[in-house]
Each structure stands twice: as C-alpha cells, then as structure tokens.
Amino acid sequence: MPARDATDVEIERVHARGYVELVEREVGQTDGARYLSTGDTVVDATSYRAARRAAGGAIAAVEAAVARRGAAFALVRPPGHHAEPDRGMGFCLFNNVAIAARAHQAAAGGARRVLIVDFDYHHGNGTEAVAGDGLSYVSTHAYPAYPGTGAGSYRRGDDIVLNVPLPVSGLSTEAFVALWERLLPLASRAVRPDLIVVSAGFDYVAGDAVGDLGVGVEAAAPVAAAIRRAAEEFCDGTAAYVLEGGYDVEALTRSIASIAATSDAPQAPDAVADPNALAPELRAHVQALLKDSQGGA
Image (cartoon, rainbow, N blue to C red):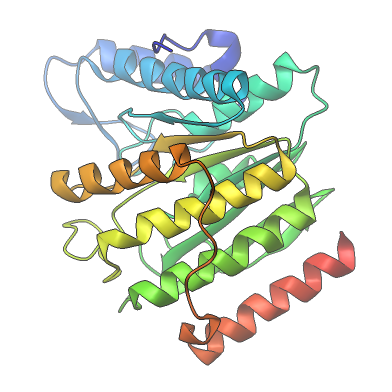
C-alpha cells in the first residue's frame, strides 16, 4: 500500500493545531538547516513535507496490516516517538505511531485498544505523553540516556504504560530477547489489544553511532516472533511496524529483512531465550510489572 500525506485532522488527533502551524511556518522560513524553536530538532525546507508523508506512511502501514490480518512495515523518516503534542524533539516532528493508532481508532468509531511496542534505544517520551483513551505503551530503553524519561510504569485510566529502563552499559543479546519474550505476553494480557503498532528503532544494535546497547542484529527475528505470537493471540495477527531510530544501514537492512521473514513464515517460532539470561534486577522489575498488571487488569 503506497504512503500518502497525513491530513490535518489525522495529525491534530495527536498534536495541537498551534504546534502544527508552527512547524509549517518555521520550515517555510528556512532555506538551510536550523533548529525548530520548540527544541533540539533540526529542520530544513523539506522537513514539513517529509514529516507529513512519514505520518501518512504509518497510517498506510496500519491499514495494510488490518486489511491482510498480518504484518506491515512503514519505512519512513523522520522518526516520531519523541514528538510530544506541542513539541518536536530528537529528530522527530510528528509522532507517527500515535497518529496511526488514533487514525485506526477513529476509523472504528473509537472503540479500539492499541498497544504500542517500542524497542528503540531511546525512550519514546512523546508516545508516553499521549497514552490513554485506548492507547497503551510498553518500552525498553537505555536509562538515563536521552531524553532522560521512562523511569516508571503506571496505569492511565484503563490503559497501561510499562517502562523497562535498561543500563546504558548495555546487555546481552539473549537477555534483550528474553526480556521481550516476557514483556509481550504481560503487556498483551493486560491490554488485550485490537492492534499492535511497533516503534521499530534499531539503534539498540551494537555499534550504532547514536545508541548501542551491545545487542546483536540477530535479536530482531525472535523479538518479531514474540510480537507475532502476541498479535495472533489477541488481534488476528495484526501488527504494523514503523521505523524509528537506527543509523547503521547494514544493521537496519538485516533487521528489517529478519522481521519480514519472521512475519511471513508459515508459523511463528516458539520462544528461544532463557529467562535466566536476565540480570536479577531486571527479572525482579518484570515480575513487579507482572504482578501490578494482573492486579489491575
């Protein structure tokens, strides 16, 4: 399904109209690179158009995933998960995954539960900021790396925010996979989503110039398998991936190819990682999330 520009109505389900106008105005006033006045996002004369198309590409990926009851991947830039309702941050202008999630809810009359899964190296502060009203969020991220948020987990009405801060020093590939193999069933049972949208950032991969958790590129396949199992159990297999970070082209290519192969395989592979690969403090954190979610679900 081809990408398209997101409309004003679609973007403004997530972002304040004044902020959208600010982005359009400031991008239109530059003939080179400059910082957006709301924060640390560099823009040039093409940024507004590119951001609209990225948000529309995320919507198209959700529509394709729903239509096929399977997976779809939006290869878009700029990324979006740092963009807050009235503020651009960290390369992000519009929050692509949140815009796509709200578009899905609007198309269904609002009565839809969406789980956003974020495995980017950085915390998606912008996505957490708009959680609620049927949108839940689960994230692993280096902490206290940029943007320095994502330390706690909580409920927002009937929805959940599950944050698992990871040491900036990194962790093993098996531990990263084991963590997601534990988190996905936990989050899915708590939310029972109609749709999973993935903030697919690959800057967690060892050697990435902007992130680097020391995790091997081979982690993408078993993490995608965990997402597929959750999607098949709760939402007819529907999962839409939207590119976030990741700044090594080879690692990006290999990771996305692994996700495509896993998503299109005749059957989702079983879990592969030993839960004991998690450090004791991470195991304790996940156990606490499990207890809290079951208690309030």
